[in-house]
Amino acid sequence: MSAEGKVKRAAEALARLPLLHTQDLMDILGVHERTIYRWRQEGVLPPPVYVGSTPYWRPEEFLRWLWGGGADRRRKG
Image (tube, rainbow, N blue to C red; front, side, top):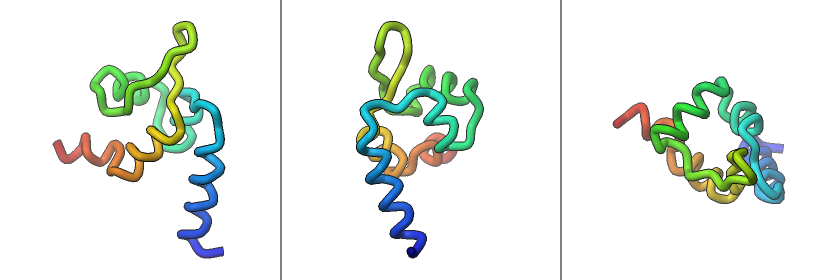
């Protein structure tokens, strides 16, 4: 399978998940929990939805953000 095919397959699997947790974002982006927290505070990440006091992200919104440049937009600004 080509790299593009693998990315598409992974994205389809990710989009089927109900919500992404902080740990999921850490694993996908390869960053520390403090980075996720800081990016949330700075508005770099798409807004989370909260279940109680725990932030979660909708996979489709996260994928749009990631494919739109994600954290790279922060570095350029």
